[in-house]
Length: 121
Image (cartoon, rainbow, N blue to C red):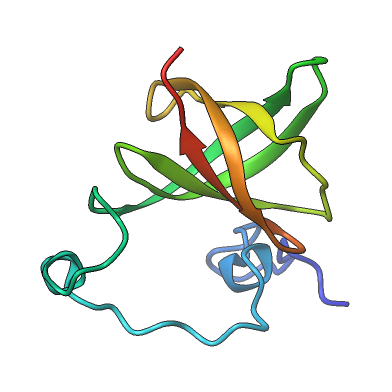
């Protein structure tokens, strides 16, 4: 398995290989217009915006899993984890970059990603 960080003496050495960090096995998805998605009768009430920030997902018992915030909306977020994680139904999402500290329900989860829906506290 190739390392996520490159160790080359060339320009850009030590940079994070983003394709490895976010999972290079999936092909990039085409960018659709958010307005078309909203107008087309989609299920989402709020438009998602791309994000890239370190975040923490914390259980009620205090167990913490570090992740990367991939997208964000008024009602929820998508988070990617470095390793396989099994989250409880209710978590707290925290990201200093986006000034988020919210309780959320885990709506869906696959091997490395999770979809969170924010709830009012």
